[in-house]
Image (cartoon, rainbow, N blue to C red; front, top):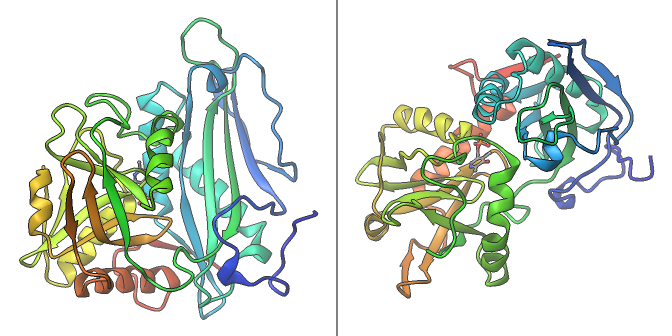
Amino acid sequence: MANKITMENQDWKTIGFGYRKTNYNVRCYYKNGAWGPLELSDSEYINIHMSATALHYGQEAFEGLKAFMGKDGKVRIFRMDENAKRMQYSADGILMERIPLDKFQEAVKLAVEKNMDFVPPYGCGASLYIRPLLIGSGPQIGVKPADEYLFIVFVMPVGPYFPEGFKPTDLLIMRKFDRAAPQGTGKYKVGGNYAASLTAGKKAKAEGYSAVLYLDSREKKYIDECGPANFFGIKNGAYITPESDSILPSITNKSLMKIAEDIGLKVERRRVPVEELETFEEVGACGTAAVISPIKRIYDDDLDKEYTYGTEPGPWTTKLYEKLRAIQDGDAPDPYGWVTVIE
Ligand SMILES: *Cc1c(COP(=O)(O)O)cnc(C)c1O
């Protein structure tokens, strides 16, 4: 319990996004053709066969979602049913055993309930990050799916993505890197896509960019997504986000599309040619970590061309961000039933 943190001794604004130990995690094993019961563990370690398919052949998928403390002292988990479905989709994509939807949600709730002391207080911008993980744990040496799987849910408090406030960052386009193949695994939330993006991500960060903006790997003509976040642009009263076979269907983006309609934007999901960057009034990256990361500049490294969007977040971006955050915190009504309240 060396790094145990409590509500009393933490500066929630500066804790950042990093691994932290909490009291318990939840585990479930698939063996002999069936999922077992949920188990509570206080260990940070797993005992795994050295020939597990997760370690050799990348049978690994994960999820990321958050829980927020409300003004009313209740904790709200955002859209966990969507994460449960997406984990099944990822499992199907790399031939892993599906974790049943109800088991996923029970495990998430249990992990939050057993770590209530770690949910940051209302209004501080910090939240409880929830990380579900599904791995092939059974041994294989030939290339085939495992016979055994392990599903784990662990949680940790994370700081606000923007400790100094909602601030725009820069993106970098480089055609010499791909994160996913056109008909590959880009649409699944699997570790392999992340391994494939580390080199480009490191280069972008070293040059002062927050992420790489990937183009479609086949033609390099259309916008795909920004490393770990989906892309959107706003112009002429429309919220425009790429349609592609190689991007991860972001639950934040799905939620923003709904809110965009509610606030009077037209929503377009279609291929977005890279030249269209010229025409957007506002641009952002969206995902669970930041909700929206507004973008002030995109630099195309191959064409030595830059696109700029102003140094402050635009009005639509700000409105979308605030509406979504208010639902998460319980400060606004939840018209679509996105929130699961833990009393
Ligand atoms: C998780 C993830 C996102 C964001 O999805 P959310 O459900 O909004 O958190 C976007 N792109 C990639 C590649 C991801 O892995």
